Image (cartoon, rainbow, N blue to C red):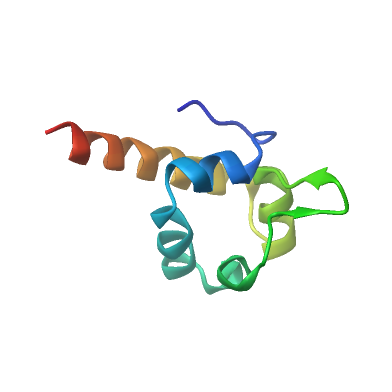
Length: 79
C-alpha cells in the first residue's frame, strides 16, 4: 500500500487495523484514535496529515513510522 500525507486514514486502518495500537504505543498523543467513533467528521476525510496535526506530531515522522510498520507487517505475513 502506498501512502502519503493526503491518504485517508480509514483506508490504512481498514487494511492494517493493528497500526492504531502500535501508533498509540509509540506516542500516547494518538490515544484519541482508539476512542474515536469515526475517522470521518462532518463529511471530511481524515488524512495522515490531519491526525499528525491533531496530535502535534510531524507529518513526515508519522508517515515514516506508518510506512515502516506497513512494510514490516507485509514481510511478516509474506513468510
